[in-house]
Image 1: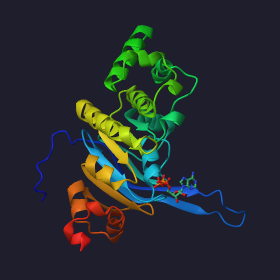
Image 2 (image 1 turned 180 degrees about the vertical axis):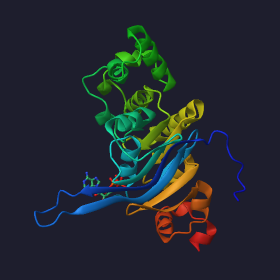
Image 3 (image 1 turned 90 degrees about the vertical axis):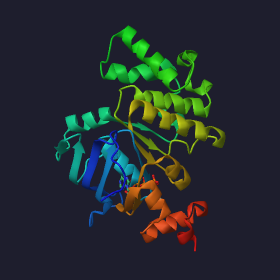
Image 4 (image 1 turned 30 degrees about the horizontal axis):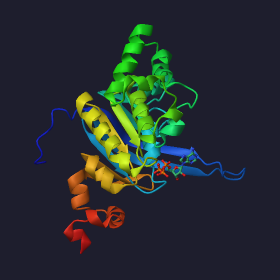
Length: 276
Ligand SMILES: Nc1ncnc2c1ncn2[C@@H]1O[C@H](COP(=O)(O)OP(=O)(O)OP(=O)(O)O)[C@@H](O)[C@H]1O
């Protein structure tokens, strides 16, 4: 039995159970269809108020996991559990629902925002698409969003090009929060930013997660950052989760050879027993 006391904020928001995703590769020929198995029996739980860190090399299936969570990719088999509801058929309404519950913050805020759209319009856009509130209520909501991410309301009248990379990423986070999601997926959210602002963005994400009780999925190649932010870790290799559990356990005493290899690339994290 686990010695950890259960956290009352650790309720499951979304769970993937034995999810498989196959892509039909573009390299298929008329003789042979090449099937790429991007996810193979992947299971994990995203909990309220907690961060799940997903690490793994390029091509291990991290982004595909994120796409399943936000309803962009349909599992070939397996289940997604939303709250208490088990979903096996990924119809368009189910995928739209996932898109409301889960929001994503991408790596590069420059491409996530339309260069010709004022920040106000970028934030109002999802509210209009989902027909949320009247004009005055939307204006009120975007003012609240911009201050939640630590920017002055004058930012609403700027274009993305007038902001720094860090400010743009704050706007992208505000936009991700516009529909009041229960989960934020942060896919390499700081790797396009100056080192000097990375910590600020990570702290902002953590504060918002705590204040709003969000579940967070943090995807990164940077194991140091993942360790700093995550409660739970899932280590992915070739479409499978090879090791998972509390961050301290996974990084402190890794049992899987692949996790050890990943940690070997970040020597400062190695526990003495691993370093030897
Ligand atoms: N649309 C697609 N069509 C065919 N194969 C794909 C497609 N998208 C991803 N793949 C393949 O699926 C596997 C998993 O890819 P995925 O993007 O999920 O990995 P990742 O861990 O997020 O990689 P990265 O860190 O480079 O973003 C890889 O082998 C990739 O080449």
